[in-house]
Image 1 (cartoon, rainbow, N blue to C red):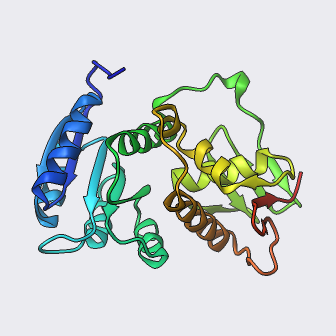
Image 2: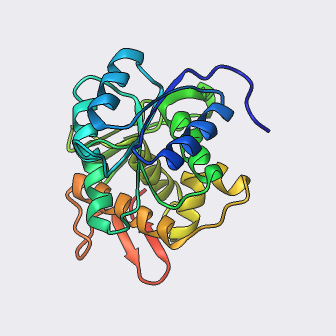
Amino acid sequence: MDETWDRGVAVVVEDDDDIRALIEFTLRQAGFTVHAAVTGAQGVALVKAHSPVVTTVDVSLPDIDGFEVVRRLRTFSDTVVVMLTARVGEPDTLMGLEVGADEYVTKPFRPRELRARVDALLRRAGRVTVPVADVPEPTTVDGHLEIDPARRTVRLDGELVQLTRTEFDLLAVLHGAHGRTVAKGDLAAELWPDQYRYGGQVTEADHRTVEVHVANVRRKLGDSPTSPRFIHTVRGLGYRFEGP
C-alpha cells in the first residue's frame, strides 16, 4: 500500500531521462515531494535549497561524478544518500560508501527495491521510535569494543567509531546473533526487510553489497579479515561475531 502522508523532500540527481522519471515516480508514490537535477552541480544546489530527507545520486554525471557530489553534500548536509550506478565492481561500491553514501544500488533496479532501501535507511535515521524498555543496554566486547543500541554508537578503546547507518545495523545484527553464523542472504534480509516484503529476492548484488559493508566495518574497527578480532568469515556461509 502506498503512503499518502507527506514524507518531506527528495532530490534526484540523474542525467538519464527515463531513469530519472522512474525514480521521481517511485519517490512521489512513497510520499515525497521530488526535485530533480541532471548534473552534479545542480544536485548540490538543490540539496542546499531544499534540505531533502533523501537524495539519490547517479555515479556517472555530465559534469562532476557522483562521488564528488556526495563529498560536497557531506560538508553541509546529513540527507540520506542512495548512490545509483551501472557499475558492479566492489571498488566502486566501496568508494561510494567511503565518501559518505548510506546505500549503493546497482542498475537495473526495480522500483520496489529502491523504495525498500529508502524506507530502511529512513528507519535507521530515526524515523521510527523504539520504546526505551525495548532498547538493549550497551555491551562491551573484551573490554575494548562498546556497542550502544540506544545511541547507535560504537566505541573502540574509548574512541568513537564513525559508522554509517547500514554499517551500524550490520554490526548490531552480527553481535545480536550471539556467536551464531549469519548467512549473507539473512544479513541482506535484516538490513532491507521491506525489499523482501515487497516480493524481492536476495541477489548476488545484495551479497556483494553485504561484503562491502562488512569490509568497511572491519576497516573502521581495525579488524583483519585474515586474523579477525571481532568479525569472522565462515567460508561459504556468512559471518560470525565473537564476543559476549
